[in-house]
Image (tube, rainbow, N blue to C red):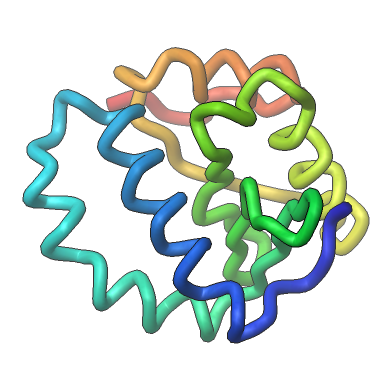
Length: 124
């Protein structure tokens, strides 16, 4: 089930955010992610966030600011089960146009977004 983020979700969402970033971005030191934890926590409660929940447990989320997708994050054990697509489709319901940035070294994410119809506008 996809639903709007609630303040009670923050701990689960932040755990998913941290673990997902450290797993997907091994080319960035883990301490960099950890050092941004508190700032991201504050930003999440101010952003538009939707969570995927099964059996009362949050297993993924999408965060947006305006038409910008800040990221889609899914628990490692729950990936490849359509959760990311469901979250992206939810965002598409509320936006005519969506943009995002993704690290080109994160090839699974690049492929996911390209398969969802996004095109690369710039590459660094």
